[in-house]
Length: 472
Image (tube, rainbow, N blue to C red; front, top):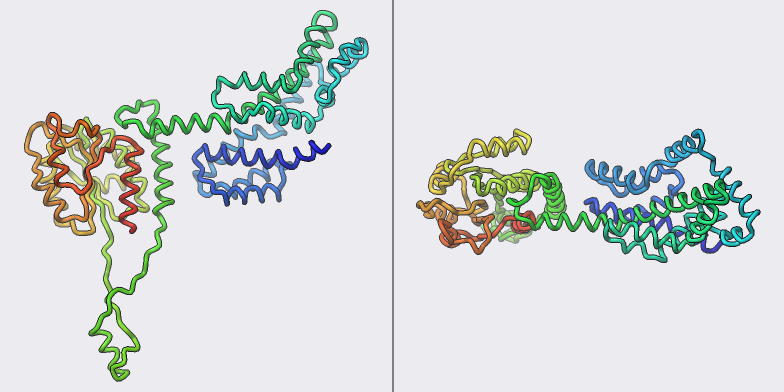
């Protein structure tokens, strides 16, 4: 009884914590404080009413429309179908023709056990009694105890599923039911069916427990491993099959950066003493400066100018950079986007007016082609050079390969002299810089930052650093 009482108190909490871990594996940002709130909510609403529990936990753990959708899907996946649906399926199965009920199977097994004392001795256990009587609480206790004994939380691979099911069945003493089935198969067909039904019932319970452990402890790890691999894979090597997943990863990175940089408290400084204004104010108090005046400095808002090479060799990287920056438009300062291969044009309004995927396709169609940095820099100078000032950050994405022609690095130097900082992102491996027709050695001399940027992880790091500087 003490064990049952402990299970009834601890097991729901353990399962809730495991569910929270499951949600974290589905990209939900849940803090320890959120977990405590969820546990308090679950304690108030209880675990009996499934709908009430779902609504209560959802209000504590899901904070946006996106997170609500993820939470609802995860809740159904983790906790399974509502009990009413299960009972409906169970009843329809029990009432099917030529399918004996659980009660009938139990009676047939009892009769066989009465006729065979040795069989009754082998099947004499609390678990078998619970299976026969349908005592769900006792079965749950036994299954959870077996799960702890075999440490099912250590499951890491889908291929281990069968192994842990077998371990748990052995820990539960299912061997006795197996031996009974072998003994009854040829002598007592009805009792054999009853034993097989109990074995199947137990196996289903164990399978559900192992599957739940896999969802929490293994599938999340597997998903994280795949996400980590994609985050560090060159964007040019990602196949079409993983493009949708890569986009979800980018959206997750966007949410993380928005949470980190979206609410920056501005430091208020008085500035320098304005002596003339203070003296004028002091004239009314016989020259005593009771009301000192301070110089007011108007801080101009920073702006970002982005130039993306959309020629064939770097088009994939440009697409994800534009997609990333478009997703961050709520927290980025004033941003203008330009695309080029040979000629350059501003695409800011195109990206704002159209769905980003369609906009990027149109940009690629209009500006794709052979790279000509000299012409691109000349076009940029005529379009935006006059707008560059000391609060402007210029970001250029390109491989700096100009087909052995003059790239007009003098214009790049002029851009750097006017802006706050000039950042060049090159998707090529750094070991390739300066080889063949690469102009990177000259580019590096005319940039504040020149960084390899071929993966989402590298892109995140660059934008994270940039936002930190702009908000400092």
